[in-house]
Length: 108
Image (tube, rainbow, N blue to C red; front, side):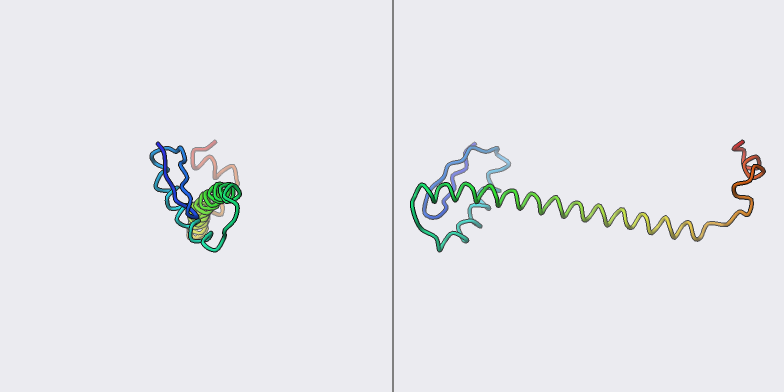
């Protein structure tokens, strides 16, 4: 599949998977807004656009990965807090660590 992008009054045709076409169009739109005040050599602009698209893509992918990592950290933190609360409310057995306690519970 090909994505046809218009950035800085230039048309770019980029080979991509079907699932990436919309993402490339969104990146091109964001890049177009940023490059509106730039002008210059057509070849240099083409290189700038392709480099900027790659960097924008990487930045968005990294941001998404960080968001997922933050969610996972929050989930794990909640699990640790719950485990600590459960441990506080567990009944204390004064026989902990003694052989008799193991025998009584069938562990030995």
